[in-house]
Image (cartoon, rainbow, N blue to C red):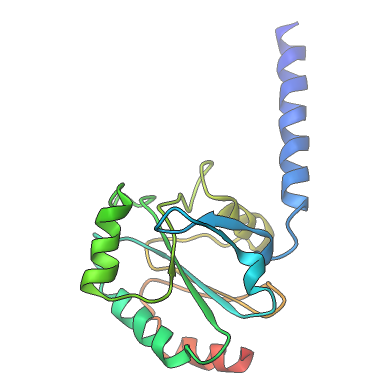
Length: 178
């Protein structure tokens, strides 16, 4: 009897997860909360290339915020959208959005979209990152992992934490999309 109940439960969970995964066709189908607590629906960027980077304020790669800001300034007159998704998934981010804002705004003066903290890996991952994992078998290996999406909302390239956001590897790929 217990086995039957467990089997029914697991089947319902699997069906639910499959239906959730199937509702997402591209990156524009998602939303998240920004660093100020406002909802950001990615549909408003539909048709624009997106660079999404999972970030953390207490990481050895945190100075890449400066590179992201340089990239933002270089491409601000194009339709490229840069989104930093702050995350404590690697235990290097503050839990409080105000502390994160101090790093982002005071130290680096960021002008690009920045999220409230979200999980980027595992069972608790934000739906954006669950979809990337399910659809493309890609996941952040560490903070400042980069994902570039084309105008159709499909992932075209990823880069590790070691690649600076304003490197020619990334800008050449961005240039091919804009």
